[in-house]
Amino acid sequence: MRALLLTWALVASALILSAAQSRAQQAPPAFDDHAQLQDPRLQTRFERITKELRCLVCQNESIADSNVDLAADLRRQVREMLVAGRSDDAIFKFMTDRYGEFVRFAPPLTAKTALIWGAPFFVLLLGGLIIYRVVRQRSRMPIDE
Image: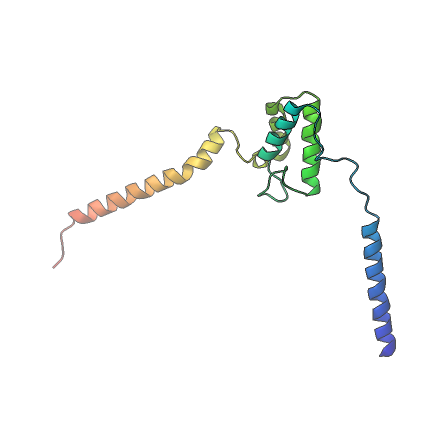
């Protein structure tokens, strides 16, 4: 029994030490994605664009607010495209082509998004029309006594 406890203690301590060692070997990111751009206009565009793009991991945060590695990569990509001279529309098109319309907090109005936003109102209107017709038909029926 004593040998079994000693074995478990050794295994547990080895696991703890290996976890601590692997955590200590992680290198810091080579790129500071929160660093300011030299041009204030580019920095303003960078901040606006990163606030309008959704973090695909967090889903309720923008990539500007998220600390996830994917958000850092997306911020780096946006920065590189801005420095390369790409327009805001080109950056949004690249992101939506790559990750889908979900990546945008406020997707542009298209037939697809109009259908998504308009469907609940249409269903509500249709339900009201059905209720109105049913009530009207029942009011015309004779009362059984």
